Length: 208
Figure (tube, rainbow, N blue to C red):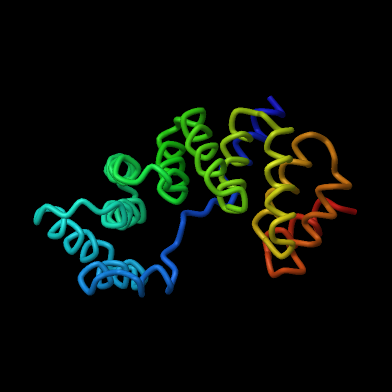
């Protein structure tokens, strides 16, 4: 029962990240694609979907167009539609770590954690320095109670970015789950110093 409670806490408090649209990624697009990604950055997701759909209806087969529309669907909570678009993006361009990682998030949102892990595996195999994919894979591993695997992924993410607040915070949760409170408290202190208020509260309330 205690483990189940910890697992549920893990799901509800873990931070996960989807691959955001960087300024550099926006700038290299055509004018129309550019506008679609700009709309995503402005959180105008329906407008972005309309722009990308118009491009698709014109017969354009571009992995980035499907990635962009998938991202917009995902932000709206339409994970099944996001999954379809990310899959199409991967079919067009197989070396596609961001689409794999975001598709993993879509699968995880539907409760398909083992399938999500496979997508994160593919993302990492294509980009060994993809810290967000390690973070997200750790969440899926935690849900299926692969605590060791989750901790290893978070440690790797931290090695890639020592100021990765979410990884410090999440590794603290994993270490609490496996009974390593000293390690958990140390991680929450680091996350708190990086600005995570919730991690700060956990340290204050649980690390005495």
